[in-house]
Length: 127
Ligand SMILES: [Zn+2]
Image (cartoon, rainbow, N blue to C red):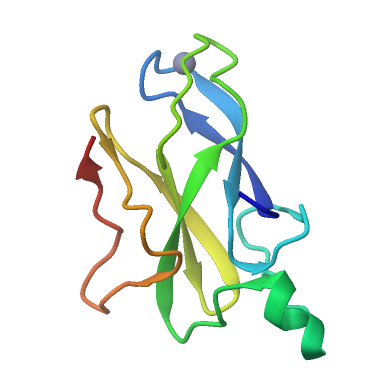
């Protein structure tokens, strides 16, 4: 899947309910296994390198990108290969994330999806 970035966070596992540390892999900004937490702003590679190293483009307003748990849940061991998470960005800043409920995931065909201003969160799809 190429290079990505990592968002370290705590989330309640949607299967066992335990609040566990999760690392979410996502592609936005300069993808070089950079470690972020909510509130950080992503870096962008400048110059010609940016064409190959950056993923997506800086956005105006809010958007989201699909995100994948790096490891299985450390509490119950459940693993999910689809985009169970979505990282929400505002401009360059990582403002939070959403987790789909069981039976849903976030669409993966679009890398960076702008949120309409009236929408507060990305919409999961069944699967
Ligand atoms: Zn769990």
